[in-house]
Length: 152
Image (cartoon, rainbow, N blue to C red; front, side, top):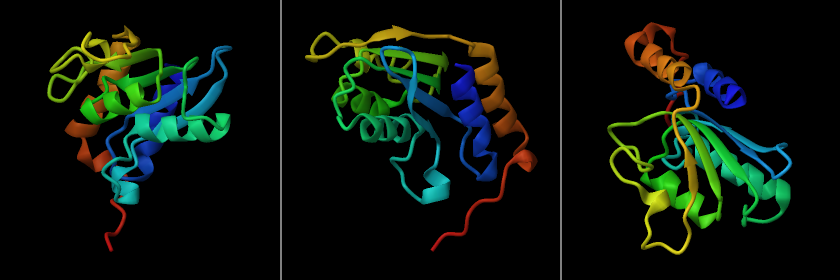
C-alpha cells in the first residue's frame, strides 16, 4: 500500500484527485503503476486502477492478469471494478472506502457479485487512515493542489 500511496502523492503535479494504484505479479513484483490522470490527460477513463492495469498488461504482454494483485488507495468505482473483472484480476487490496461511488462494498459490490462469472478476493481498509487523510487534505486544502493543465 505504501507504493500506491507514493503514486497517489505524485498527482500533486496536476489537479487530479490523489489516488494511486500498483499491480503486483504472483511473486510480489510491481508490474504496473498508476495514478489518477483524468485532469492531466483529459481522459475520463484515466483512473489510477485503469492506468495501472494497462501498464501491467503491456509489461506482461497479456491482458489476462490472472496471477496479479491490484493495490489501490481508494475503493474502486464501477468502471474500475469492470476493468478489474475484465482483466481477471483475482485479488484487490484497497485503503479508503468511497461512500459516494464505491463498487466494492460501499454502494455496490461488483467484484463479489455471484451473478458474474469471475469473482475477486477483496481486502479492504489497508492503511485506511493514511489513504483517507490524503483525500481529505486534497479536498479541504485546494491551495495545495498543483496547477490544472490547460484545456484544448
